[in-house]
Length: 577
Ligand SMILES: Cc1cc2nc3c(=O)[nH]c(=O)nc-3n(C[C@H](O)[C@H](O)[C@H](O)COP(=O)(O)OP(=O)(O)OC[C@H]3O[C@@H](n4cnc5c(N)ncnc54)[C@H](O)[C@@H]3O)c2cc1C
Image 1: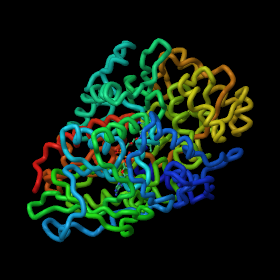
Image 2 (image 1 turned 120 degrees about the vertical axis):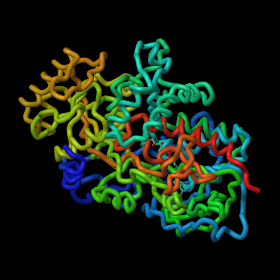
Image 3 (image 1 turned 120 degrees about the horizontal axis):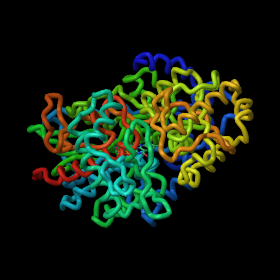
Image 4 (image 1 turned 90 degrees about the vertical axis):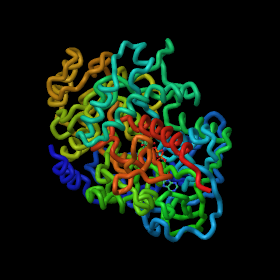
């Protein structure tokens, strides 16, 4: 199916905005992701049985995650944006080269990093380690961005974890998988850098940051299957989410004396007469992701500004300009600050932006809860081990290990949510321990004793369902999927022994592949394709690395590899007076 056809189907399937349930106690960022009533509703999809309760990461869970290891958040915590609608989209005043520099700078540093996710924190760490006086600004009240609520899965090639399990991998294989998913739109040089530095970066998280990675009883690090990867290479943090990486990075920055200020929104980037980036305007206590609010503070960056402001999945106004199908009827997995005003400021300062209309839907979301919720971590970890079924026909419609673009398009084309059916013994142990109970408690996953019960609950033709399960189980035993070519993992068993666990799946906006274009040193290019002096970027704020579709677990690699390069390059930039 073509992309445009999929998008048309998507528009048809998404329908109109449904009722939004307000989650109780919306006081922190994660609760905002669940309760933010900015038109992000549970998508209108055909309802089967009771729709679950609102279920993004709860306040307690999120705070616990960020407090991991006793980390005190180093931000000033000026508490700005709350849960209000995302109004981003680059309304900051235009910055023209050499004109309208502020009369006075209020503050100064050498390297100013915008954003406190994987990319920003790793850039700040490297810049500070290289001796630069470094400051991080973050517009939200809490640090961490999408990185803190992510699963933290990390695609690493040629790791010791792979070697211990006899898995052969290479930079070429990794890049080939990225490019296949990305439809060849990827910046190949950047893909190669990401793949070739993935292992040293993973070892850095382990040896320097002290991140623990999920392992079996014998201590071997588990390597898990992931959609679109033709080789097993993804590693999962023991803690189960990205705060396992964010929290120790925050600790390191504190130790390095990096200033980290929350409640400060980048709205403008200044360039001097020579075209060099020399500083920024941030608005303190801006509200509702709106760059026209708040009090201006002018910060001189004597060496460089590093843009690490993440993606714009939550910015409905911006994203629907690039893909009109992705209006406010389409839910999103991101934190509420994932908006585009920083990207807009970079573009007004002359940055080249690419691939802005490649916006990824995560296929493993639940239509029965809002935001990321409890579903995706649980559902995605099962996809290698079980089928997903169209309840209308009782049949499979897609390779469940396809990349996200293919899988999401297939669900949307199907018109109704697919039904993931897994039996207990096929749920990976770490997933069973960490994610099954929360999914059941959130009301999105239900337990059944037989296929007949499942057929009755979801109104699936029972005979067709049984035939499909038998056929799928034959593929598992043979190790070959004759219908869709799914790569059946060696440890998969026939999905045949009750209890079964069943979850409905439907796509939500998850990742934005577009952003500013950078060169090999992470320096931002202008519209003449020349590097802008004093301006660097990394992570989801950049575009071109992943092409049409980011592979799962490659964002951790992208953000950390390129974040570190950006920080190292920024520290080397010549300082202005
Ligand atoms: C729920 C979820 C699960 C995921 N799981 C995985 C996974 O397991 N593996 C994987 O590879 N990828 C995963 N991803 C994707 C990946 O986590 C993100 O792409 C990555 O965290 C982005 O990191 P970043 O540093 O670029 O941006 P972020 O972590 O989003 O940080 C950007 C920060 O910049 C701030 N900011 C934005 N605008 C401004 C401004 N104007 N001024 C100041 N600050 C600003 C934001 O508030 C935010 O805190 C997941 C994403 C989500 C949403």
